[in-house]
Image: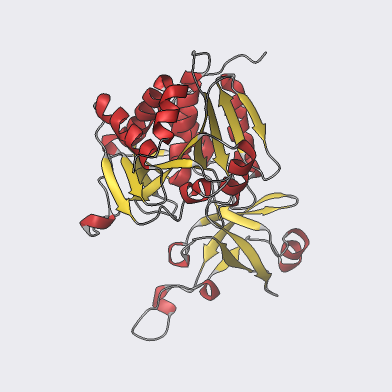
Amino acid sequence: MYERITMDRKERIDRLIQAPGATGLEGGVAGEVLDQLTAMGAEAWRDPAGNVFGRVGTQGPVVLLMAHMDEVAMMVHRIEDNGMVRLWKIAGVDPRILPGSRLVIHTAQGPLPSVAGALPPHLQQGTEQPAYTWEDLLCDTGLSPAAVKARVQVGDPVTLAPEPLWELLDGRLTGKTLDDRGPLGALLDLFSRLVGKPLSCQAVLCASVQEEKHGTGALTATRGLKPDLAVAVDVCHAPPPTKEFSTFPLDSLVIDRSASLHPGLVGLLEATAKAQDIPFETEAEMAAKGNDAWDIATQAGGVAAALLSVPLRYMHTGAEVISQQALERLERLLEGWILGLDEAQAKEALCWKD
């Protein structure tokens, strides 16, 4: 029997963002999620695809709550004769943000600190200074060429160096991989409160793998679990300044309406938010693609799925910004919904009324 260990949402997120977890190589962050689930007393396991699960409740409909734990990253592309390491992206890393960044090469012998360098602007030729490309960048370990080649292999994952979560004013948090470990931390915080409570459903948290590239984790998790209802939780855009239709206020909670999501479940979440006086925004799009919701909805013969999003600034950088108020609204909505969900309500949500 494990002694329950409590921590607040910020501490959970701080621990998550400092764990390595490049897309397809999520072992470090998976271990952190397992530790947090075990410490709170939830049933916890990891499947062959690498997804991590936590379950509370033993009867009733199976409700899947999913947030991905992988991060955009890089890999070693080649090693130059002078010992400099060339990089290539794993998922959506923008090379323009990298010069001057601290990096970690995850080698078979352990993490190797390094920095991303490029030719300084004042040494570039011509009057126009083009944006950096992958060929412009070098990863400098400080080691001799022989030492680099003895330790680093082509294909080794490379991530931004871990740094503590930093709190800005007005309840904003900044750090790397808040996409999607900010919402994941909120789900873990929610589950810590659900443990031991009488539930009329089985709530299953899934920290999924490979969302940033193929959605493999959502596909395999849904096929294996076969949930009755599912809610994917991710981030959406809040970068200033952008057009009104493509961005949301940073403190808001966003409920998605699209043709690929189940209208009954979406309506139930909207009704729960209204009943609890939780303000929300609505995102309208043809299909909820580019996140786990689409992959969930199209598996296991079709699953009733919804998508909740938290706005994020400066996505896929080392200084993403998210709002604690938005995360709190996310938790409140899901907690109220889970505590009130039973077999009859699940069947009502699944009923097509078109």
